[in-house]
Amino acid sequence: MHLPAGLSIIANPLNYGDNHLNTILPLPDSASGTTIYRFDPATQNYGEAITFIGFGLGWISADPRSDWLVLNPGEGVFIQTFDPRDITFVGKPPNCTACIPVLGPIISPSLLSRAEGSPAWA
Figure 1 (cartoon, rainbow, N blue to C red):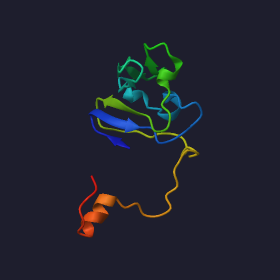
Figure 2: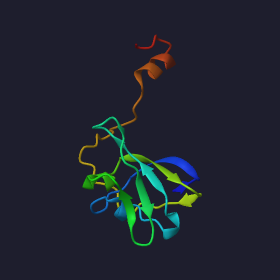
Figure 3: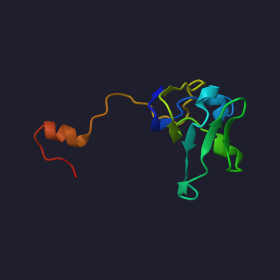
């Protein structure tokens, strides 16, 4: 995925091991300073920034929670880069045990009713 310089929104589409950022989103040393901003639903605010430091340190944060550096499939964050950068998530698609199967095309009742000339449902 290509990111322009500045702030972008990304989401983890894959599952791999513990889904720690160091595992699923490894970056080269040249990406030092790349920062992730993550929303904390418990506080209804953004938590401590997560920063990538090269030379073997990886993703770090002042937040003491071990799960703060875990990005599970479907979770999204803001990421700030200082230069345009290609990033690659590592992993495989998660097993979908809670998915709703689609048995056919889904048509909105309001679109259908408008197409047939009858009034749309509220």
